[in-house]
Amino acid sequence: MDHVQIFFGAESRPGHNKFRELHLAAKIRGVGYNVEHHGEMFFSNALINLHMLEAARLAGVDRFLSVSSVGVYPKDCAVPTPEEDGFKGEPEASGYGYGWAKRLAEVQSRCYAQEYGMKIAIVRPYNVYGPRMQFDPETAPVISAQIMKVLAAQDVLTIWGDGEQTRSFTYVSDEVDGMMLAVEKHPFADPLNIGTSEEIKIKDLIETRVRPAVANDGGDITFRGFKDGVVYLNMKGSCAGCPSSTATLQHGIQNLLRHFVPDVVEVRPI
Image (cartoon, rainbow, N blue to C red):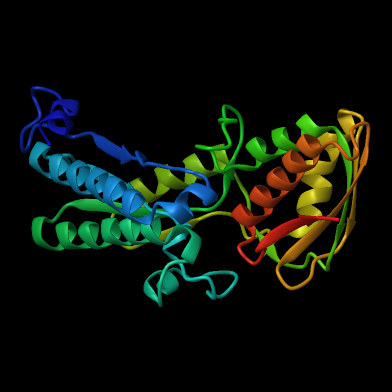
């Protein structure tokens, strides 16, 4: 806590700190890591959130933005997803610990607003992408990191299934605008989804995000469909049959689709 209080500066004391704190700090990992470390993800993120909001209260921060996550929603939530579904059932299984840590942050925000009169905005970002994204597949569960894995193999993919599952993506500047509006116009500890109403299907995700990048590197992707949670890949190209190439492609596509479309359970090469 001492280090968090230092963050606000020596002059931070009630009535003297009329700035906005935008709390975006979090411990983020890929889906595979999250599945095996629910306790770690819950503990680390819960501590971050608890200390940051308490330090902001002690410092007399004028307004506080609590950045939550769509990870608070259960797997079977409605699409488009209403904010009131954020505490229905359990968070989606792959991000269970992280999802509960974010739910805890929202509860803390409501309690602090009620008891201390703090002006707190709560936002739930949706699949943000844009410039300056990290490309480390272990720490950045984003579409750019997974495209890099696909490009590294330089192969042709054929994918079977119907590909009708959908997700929305939000460009980073739009997300920032939404956050700033929330902290200015809606500091009532009432969560807001910050995203777009545009939904993209698995097959469209591959066609519009992955296929152009692979094509620029001399490869190609042909979408064939999806069935019972399994995406099947048929790989052809300069390194067809190379075990390392096959593994890279399988891992890259699997992580990409599982991150954005939880209905995808597995990717299998054939």
